[in-house]
Image 1 (spheres, one colour):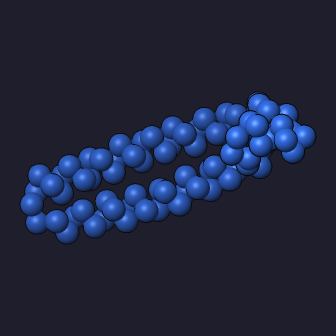
Image 2: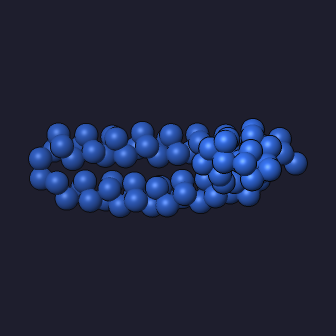
Length: 82
């Protein structure tokens, strides 16, 4: 996916067009972030200070919810592109 509308226009592409492939790339990157977040959640369990452990795990759970929401939105957008 091109980074800027100006770059897209310079290459002859529509400025505000996103493809299903672009959305799949974003979804793949969210998957990688999700894996890192799972590792953070597991690592937080080894922290001896309970409030720090709980805070990191709560943050990780919120990140999981946000990732799921973004993935749902990506799926909705992919359906619109069909």
